[in-house]
Length: 327
Image 1 (cartoon, rainbow, N blue to C red):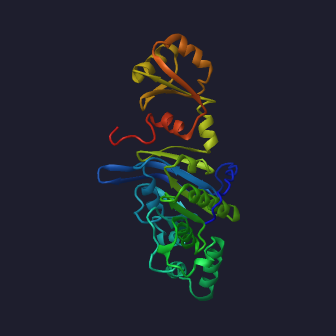
Image 2 (cartoon, rainbow, N blue to C red):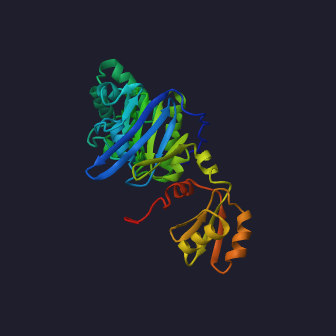
Image 3 (tube, helix red, strand yellow):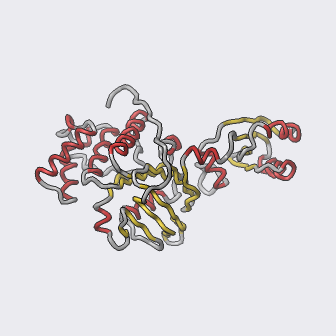
């Protein structure tokens, strides 16, 4: 990898789902008594980069395991590239590339051997496999490393090999589960630059699960998940603009009491979250004077900021993104 920090391209405008590369309808899944997914319905357009954003335990990984056919298709339906995942699993697997959070490389094998064995799994052999493998190694800057053992590569280079493997059979849909885990900030940025470049080169559709807000910001759309539910799916800009121009955060000694009083006396929709009171949905600066006039003795500090995806999550769920177990 180079020592310079790559520039960050802006996500391209997304005008709404095209004919669906992926369609999920009323999908639910349970682990015993625990509901991992609850009535998830979602369309992903061809050529779209969709981010599944949610905290640990929100159902992202379970959803990707179902889409990759590692888990049986439960109540609900899934279509990938027009194929029914429950009835046409073999054909679906030929149309998806998968890179999970846990590395799939054999560290004792060379980069080229890892890629070659992946090709054999998909029925590629001889000149066709060699040509496809060489093209991908060159595309990801790995040609000079082809004979090095995978375990000797940096985390960023190993992720490039994972991508080469996942794309070797030219699938139209790429599924990624926390793809930048273990990468330093520069390597994470380079990895996402690569995803944008891949999508720009063809009709590749990408679904990437992440718990990182900055990664979700780089997606065409974000599907916000919490406790197995799909809360909302839209562009990052649209999700944030729905909260209004600004978010107010109030520090006080009794957040639940102040939140209730703001609603009762001023008609403001306020939430007590993580020891503070948050107000959004168009309250903006015009509400500051009213709040300070009425509750000057209760407010210790007041902050005004532009909405973030975490503000969207709090507004939709009533709790912060990363909360303590059982909170």
